[in-house]
Image 1 (tube, helix red, strand yellow):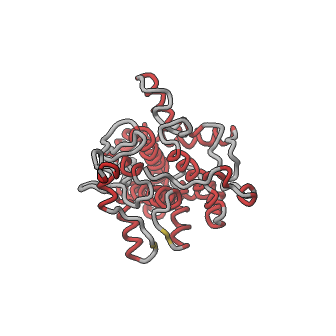
Image 2 (tube, rainbow, N blue to C red):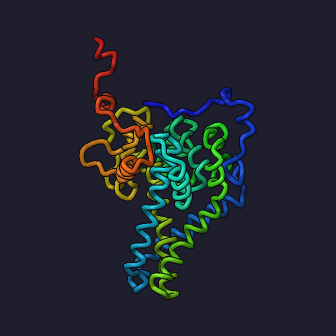
Image 3 (cartoon, rainbow, N blue to C red):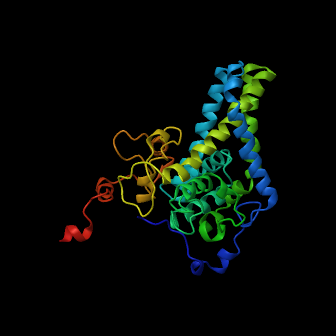
Length: 329
């Protein structure tokens, strides 16, 4: 498996040690941050629980659906294309406006500041499903009880760990980028904009308070919760069950029924076999809207040096493929 390039502690220079944090906090999560995190998980989830009776009561219109879908895929691709495939794995090189736009869109998914998100994910790849992985479902063993506890931990409880991933160790490149540090430290503002935008659009389109309220319910609360849990399912479900056609050093797997809502991220086995590849769904019929969006950006001339899958490389990573030693023999 190709490893994620992160500097070792010995590789950090005195300049690296003086880098600013990419968040308003530090590598220690405060009680206030944990409370805010809990609120942003619990309140949107409660909205999902009452979504059916709310819709049944007539508080769901086409305007709400359109706003929620647009916000879901706009912010979701900010995470998958921006936070994940570019900022974490450098699968392509965007121009400056697109770089900033991806950081903003990903921040509006309300999954944490970009620098902290990237640091966590790089650490996950370095220790995937081993000691040191911040969110492995196998943390407590393979027994039913251990795996149940591990799934809950990998899905969301790891977010409350007091000890956060060191940003200076795992994301020094982002901390040297003034654009990204600025966006990362502005995270509370992007959260507010993400929640308020559906209210404003819904109110203006319907010209009513009811339109503003229902747009907030569906386009803000329900949208945020659904995107949270789909994203977290990549950490939990896609490291527990699914197909594993490619060789990786962990238990990453492909889960087909998450492909559309996860925007291609659930083709997780190939991603861990070849982390810098810009396309995760490399086999026939594997939908990957994030890769398609990168392809469009390339056509528009907004990105370059895209690391598209190479047939020979992909075939060499298949389970059962000859190893170099066997080929030589």
